[in-house]
Structure formats: structure tokens, C-alpha cells
Amino acid sequence: MEVRLEPYKFLKQYLNKAPSNYSWLKQKFTEISRFAYDLAFTQNIEDKDKKTITQRDKGILMFDSVERITKENGVIVSVFVLTVRREYIKRLETESTLSYDDDLSKILIDLNSLVAQDLIRFLTSFPDKKILSYSEFCEIKAYRLYKESSIISKQKKEIAKLKDKLIEFGINVYGKGIEFANYD
Image (cartoon, rainbow, N blue to C red; front, side):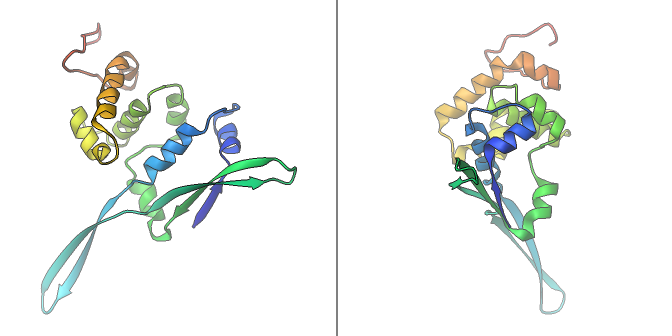
């Protein structure tokens, strides 16, 4: 299934304001396209023996192009092309590690840090995670596979700076070099 999305129109309807930059939306689609699932298949071998094969599957949603099209009025616009493999549509909807609740997204748009937005979405999706270290979060999100160590370190500092904002979402940030606040 292929979806063509005009970013300006999408953001205008979704945010109810005229967006001037699509880069964060492009980054979100790139992030979603990195989803991977461990799929387990059980096979019956001979009598009652069963063999379970587990494999990591990627390519559920692919965001790999931005096209330019000419509208009826002659205006040239960018269009994002998203491809979702049909067999994973339900799985993507139910097992995503990101919460994209409408109300939550409208609140998060005012938060300048993408890693903080990602952390809030993750913890909203998995409220049973009571204590989560930053290195565990990086491991779960597979940041080390596509981000340099310096960027991961910078993002850790962003989270520390946003300690007072994150407490509004019920997330208390502790760690080396992070000062205690009144609510700690």
C-alpha cells in the first residue's frame, strides 16, 4: 500500500497553523521506517517435534522518497511517499513502540527536543517501565545503529536540561551532574 502525503497540507490540518519547515516530520517518518519486529514461526517436524524460527524483519513501512508534483493551479509541491507492506498494517498499529495519540502529539509539538518527544512517546506506550536508564532507552530504540556517540551524548544532555518539562509528563530525571529540584 502506497501513501502520498503533502507535508504542508498535512501539517496545516493537523497542527492548525502554517508550517514553514518539514524536517521534523521527515525525521519522524524516517524513525518509523526503522521499526523492526522479531517474527517467530513454529514448524511441525515429523511427529510431535516443533521447531521455532525467529527472524528480525524490517521494511514494514518504507519512507524513501520525496517527490515534486505540479498541482492543478501550477504550483510545485513536495510530496512524501510512504509504503506500508500490507501484511504488517495491523501489527504496526498495535505493536508500535511509539504513541501517536492526537492530544499527546499536539502537546509534544511545543517541546523542542526530538529525543525528549521520543522518550515521552515510549514511556506513554509502555507505562510499566518504572525505571529506565538512558543507555537502556538507546538500546531499545536502536539509536547506536544509526547515531554517532557524540549525538547520543548531546541528546542525553538535552534530556537533563528538560528535566523541569519532563516532570509535567510524570518523568523524573536523575543522574550524574543533574541537580535536584524542589519536587525530587
